[in-house]
Amino acid sequence: MHGSHSSSPVLIKKARIEIIPLIDIMFFLLASFMLVSLTMMNMKAIVVNLPTATSAQPNTKPDFIIVSVDALGDFYFEKASDVCARRSPHVRDPEGRS
Image 1: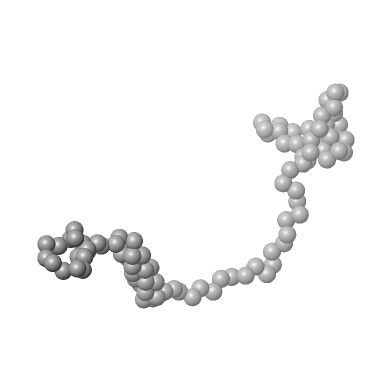
Image 2: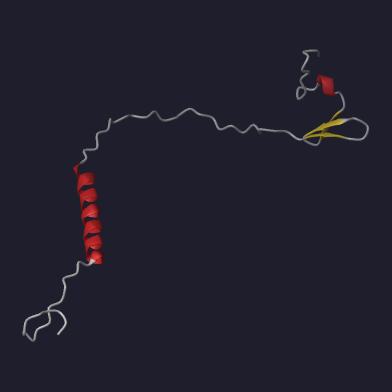
């Protein structure tokens, strides 16, 4: 008989504290408090009447154009020949000359 010095036939075991059930209970309490605190928050918001667009025109103008230059130095805008590039409305001179 290991656990006692008396003449009792019942073995006395040492008490143990199990950690795993305590961790489970702590997670349950944490989740419960989080959910309760979320429901206690009052959501305060302002109602805003947003404007709606009724007269907007769709933008059909392309963002870019294709410019090609052949071996002779002729310009092509959108595959159309434009030999006189200085007078073309597609080309602007950065120095302001026309």
